[in-house]
Image 1 (cartoon, one colour):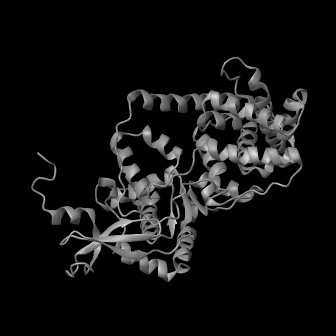
Image 2 (cartoon, rainbow, N blue to C red; image 1 turned 90 degrees about the horizontal axis):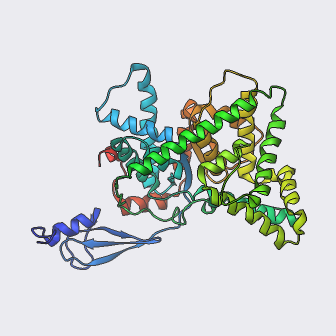
Image 3 (cartoon, rainbow, N blue to C red; image 1 turned 90 degrees about the vertical axis):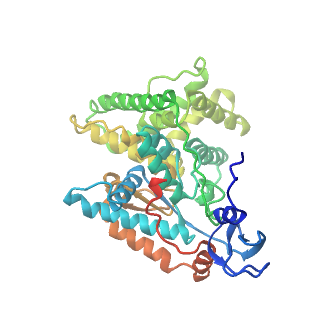
Length: 434
């Protein structure tokens, strides 16, 4: 027995197409040809009466804004959708917050459908979602997939090594480094494609062993950060600048010593930057990065006995701050270290690891970030250079103004074509129920 038994060809084609339905140019039937296939720069329709395909025409080029939504922002959007559907109640003082996130979801979803912006997924979303309850993880994944249109940021190791090795090579040769902040340096090559009208999400159950490994990794990182806190709290006299220099210097020393270590073992954590690397890379990959530094030295004529010294010199140089990842991560890890040194009662916050990672990786490439409030003021006051506009839960009106500006400055041709391809552009309020 076939899965298609009992389903007419007309119903089958209707399931594979979507409104708006227009007159079929092949058989002439009225309002029977719906959007079927959306390619990078064109789309086609299929008629549910005659079954024939027809061209819908070409599609204009896109230049979508890239917005990173941190895990907390996505969580509030899911909470807002659940509240809207009457599935939960909120405390009176939380209702305005929830309504703000519902409005944010509505605006982002519609602008995504209009092909004006996209909110790519990241490995951090996946890891944080994977340790949630199965029901919540499934709902949050659907929200994330909707707003990302299945596009993702590259893995952390790829972004970091691209930046660092190109800069290190230029530094060794005395050349000027020009950082490329194009979004396609950090995201899928399809981010500026027209969205498919349907996304397939496989809700496979993660093994208990894998989920436990993620939880153990998070606990281990928290424990390692606690060890760094204990050390920092004994260093009251150090300035912020001294902590920043130490963060870079200690990581540079790690890169020089790994090749001499047995197998793929790692020494005790000596810097928070190292902890950032450990949280996104296996030990063997850290060894591989170290060997790559030595390989680049060899390529550009640094004698074997001087290579370790040259690598450490690089991490002590002012030029290292031209690498966006190290500029941002060293500033933020030094800030954590300095605050810990001045406050013996300061509690260890393991979430700082993921927060600093996504800021260091994505701020240089995204157009905007919506994130928790706790880092917002620091990003505004620290002397950092990055592409993104930073919004937090404390300045949501500014975020809405930003979204409105994207829409008001958009090409009317693109908006009209989006309506022609996708039909009514309405928020998908029940996406979490799929």
